Image (cartoon, rainbow, N blue to C red; front, top):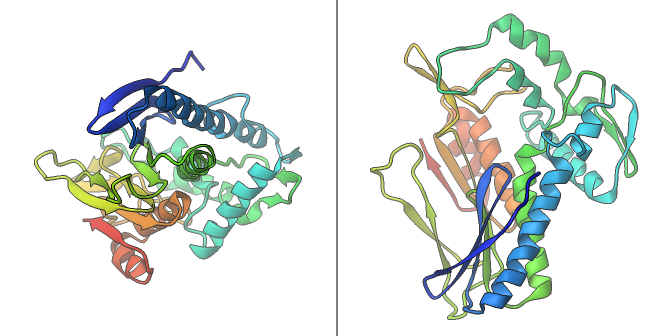
Length: 297
């Protein structure tokens, strides 16, 4: 990875620290005018996000993810952090009855969401289905054994996990109100100094003329899942990048975007993605949860 840096800017009555990570623009907002503190906390947050990205990115040849994917069925040693992430992935898999599956990323070999009209064939998809299924993965607190030819991709939970870790670090280091935003997945440490909530905009996907919806956030997190930029169009039919790991096919009638508010970002992200995986049943699932959510059809 090349040289990475943060930049500090004035924003309203506070400061914005900006950096890039996880293929997204990232930002730390502080309800403070202390530039020195902003640089300290900005580096704290950015370094934590970069650490998690390097550790779990499938693009990094030296990452834990790559070591697991290249193991060819052999046991790989893991640490407590990786065990905790795998345990959460297992919880997502079980709660979703197999729909939320971090082993399904292998489908990208035949699905290319580049705005074209090229669909994979049924035989191409069928060849990959036996290589999907988190229930085939064996792990404990010290090792993981991934069947040969299978792959894991932490991308579906990594960004939200990083948000939560950054909020935890900020609370330990400072009492300055802060908001961490990693490419639209975000959380706050609490209310602003004037006891007012943070104002967070949720953009309507794909429609610049639509007004941004503003959500007031006093605590917790927001996460969004959507297909505004990743889809295929074929004979007038829109194929979302949200794929059903059981069929290998694009989820039919998936909403354009789902945003969920929850105490933790990783929880909000799981529910937003799971809602997308329900397709037209997203409302039924999310309405059964005691958490605020916004669905854009």
